[in-house]
Image (cartoon, rainbow, N blue to C red; front, side, top):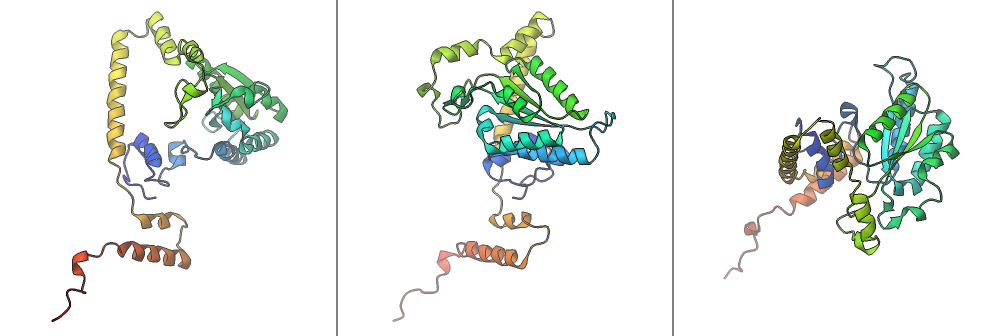
Length: 286
C-alpha cells in the first residue's frame, strides 16, 4: 500500500510498517540494499539466488574490481531448510555458480520441532550434496560469525560460487507471542545456553581488552531504550492507508477491469458514510 510516511528517513520504522500491515510496497530494496522480511518461510533464498544470477549476468562477479564485484546473502532458520524453496535455491545456486551466501541461523527449534526431527546430519553438511562448501560456526560468537561471513562473501564476489553457513545457536525465548516453550523444552537446556549469551560475551571481550567500561555499556543501554521507545511511538502513530490505494500498486498503468473494481470498492465504502440524520423517510403525514 501507499507509504504513509513518504519521504521519511525512518528506515527501521518503515520496516515495522510491514508488520503493522499498513505498508506493503513502498520499501525500495535496491535503494536500501536490503529486501523486506519474507513472510513465506524460505522463499527469500530463491529471491536471493535469482538476484545473484542476475548480478552474475551483469558481469559484476569475479572481475577483480572491488568496487564492482557483488555478492548476495540470504538469512533463514533451521526450520526453513525443510522447505522445498530452500533446496531449489541450493540447486540453482550450485549449477549456476551464483554469488550467494546462505546463512542459516540454527537455533535448534522450528517452533516446537527439535533439530533432530528436521535432519539426520548437521545442516552445513547438506551443502556438499548440492556441490558447494558448507561451514558451521559458533552462532553465539559475534566475531566468528563476522569473519566467516566476510570470507564467504569474498569467495562469492571472486566468482567461486555459493557457500552455506550454519550458525549454531539457541532460541532463548518463545517462537511467537502464542508459543509456550516450557511445554517442550527443558529448563536445564535454557540455563546452559544462557551462559553463552553472545551480547555478554562481546561485553566481556571489550572489557578485558580495555575497549569499553561500565559507563560505555550504560550509555549504550540508555541509547537503545530511547531508540526502542522512539520506534514504538513511531509505529503506533502510523496511519492506516486508504483501502483503495492497493489498486495503485498492481500495474504501472491501470487496466479497465482494475479501474472498475477500484470504483466499485470506493462506491461500496462510500455507502457507509451517509449521514443517518439525512433519512428522508421521516414520520408519516397526518
